[in-house]
Image (cartoon, rainbow, N blue to C red; front, side, top):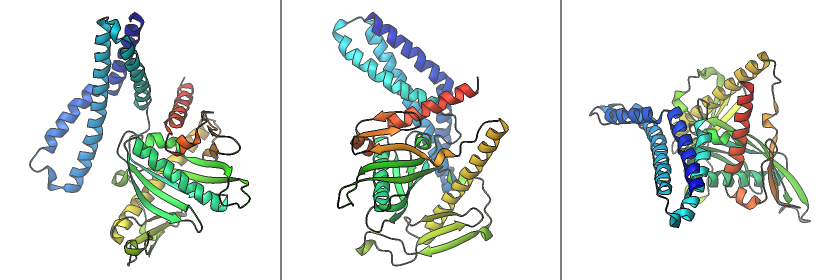
Length: 368
């Protein structure tokens, strides 16, 4: 029991240090002030601004409550171990192991340094080389991310989806909202994903390789200060696709916007009206232009520092092998899992955390 007590004391010290670094007490005070503001009689006079305020408050409140609950749980476990009741040792050992795991993940979240790590995300998947297999693979990835989002407390909305000719999808754009650090975690998924399997579309059941590309942008919507010249845009409308029957749109509500200077094309068909789809498509376009400018600045800074600018961010990052053996391996971190079914069912946190820790290590080395 003494070693367990020591372990929990060290854990408490670590959690308290992280809490202080994040300013949880200060943020709790800020939440209290925001709640007073939200209770003012004229708060909802400007509904749009009020809604943004409530979203910010909700995120901050969730962060504060999460750390407060975790701190209380660690303190309770420590107090019980200090009582020295050996009958509780097995139960407390199990609790300590759980708390260590939770603390490790919260520590990773505590060191997210990007300005948009805790923002919502826009994720796009595009079928690549591999024909029908690639389109089927893109749909498998769509399901994987939808399951991951569900398991981790995020809400998803399919903004646009292009069906494949024979199977699967050509592309899909998804909004991932709410929960903790959706953009921060999903950064690990940008790039090309490779699938190796016996093709269900090959009558001889031969092994095929298929590729799909994942792109990501922070969904910061109206907070993005990007000036877009209307003369640079080509806006097309078309009838939104659907499942058929009553789901088929009778009017051209879907919107496609082409930004001619960059060649960026975005489209949205999930909203009920053409105006709503146009507004959402413009938000996505601004996010993509913003992200493009950020990458340009980062590349220029890296060049000034004398570093090699790695243009391989769009290269293959992960292999999913279903035949002749079972393995999913991240080629950047060497993290691997021998259960592809679990990964394709949304079990991605190991890959995400491994990648994020590798990036933190690189950052620490570059600043020393």
